[in-house]
Length: 567
Image 1 (tube, rainbow, N blue to C red):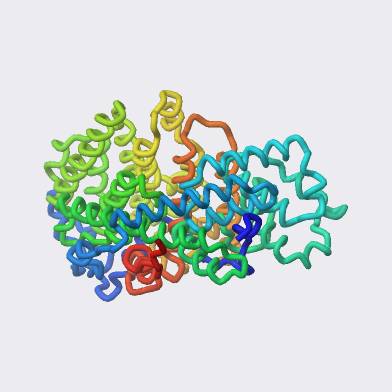
Image 2: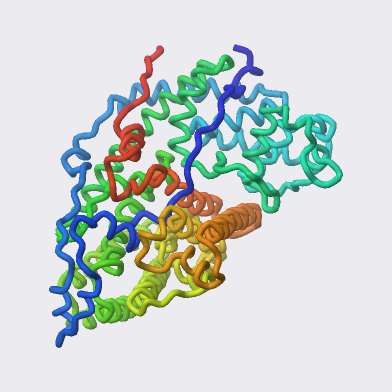
């Protein structure tokens, strides 16, 4: 097949994803919802006691949540694509695709090639080629040499803008001026150009200032699930390139085999912490690993994936403590002990809090030791700060609940982006992904880059949008805004949607701003914001495993794509 037919888009409309949820561990509302069959009044937790430990008996008597992804099932996962023969065929196909890419001449075909490689999930094999093609496109864009080529081509303009923005190139939205009328609206003739309007729709979400009226763009979707879906769509395209399709299918299956091994090791690591033995601990390792793959799916990032998967489980346990198990007095003492990282302050606390402290300490020391050996950096000060910030923010939410205080929206936002635990996850991701780790990057991390705050805000507010007011027992952003302004529920929800969109635009702006923070870190932060769109697309997939999330998990970690090996 000729090179100019390599990667033309199939005529299909992207799948729609609902807004994503706040985080991977459950909020008070979510946790209580999954235990609604055993209602116990929260007020019982405020019974006076002579010793703080006595409060441990004043807890709800719920049963340990069930788990469909048991340890034995995870350990039994296997794949025929783990063999060396498939890797050799993969290398051969990579070489063939690389040769085709090198022979592309038409600028638009290069952009289409990049786009399809990304959506098929195989762009990580061609980083050098993609950078070279994008550098050429950017230089032409800056020089204005491509104005005539794109002046009347909305599709070409939109796809170039989107790809350059995705990869951190600072390009102006002025490129769309020739498609607007005198008042700034897109000219009526453009609406007949379906491919161009769809590309504009995707591009608008990578803008810092361009407004839009469509729901969920490609930019917000979970990359690995998008790849699984797009492979099927690409196969149906009349312009499909068989070499590229074979590589996409084979690569997906090989990466799936690698993910299976990472999942097994993560499961064993989680079990070794002993936290699964706590009576209330929920085993959601599979969902946690799903989230970790959503953050970093590339096969060579297995260490980061395993850390994040187990870390989310560890966070889930203590999040449940702050949300539903600890009394206010216990939580205040526990937070103080964790702030000082001092086990001696836990003498009067329940045993499960002591167990958690020791497990967390051992978990973090293991990771820190590995990072110190590999990269010569002590991550402990950064990790401790991230944890103590999280504990303090979680305590503030508990105090709001117990005092029945409804904060203003700004007070709520200032605290709850921290209690999402995203800061903890990204600190660990930074030390795992950054190589080398520079002093400038550490200084920037210490100041908390805006991308962390924006991602945490998106995750928290998206959770609130997917919770109805009659289910709420604690103040959410919606309730805070209604209480503060007298707005209706729908007006409050619209306000929260606007804050989410603004946060995405701020992250996009950060992406094109020069920073000592590695690009991989920024992508990890944005990917964590994408994860929840899949986890909660059809309800709470973290709590209720027998929902659509089950099919997504099976498609990523259990079911390979049918593929005929061609010698």
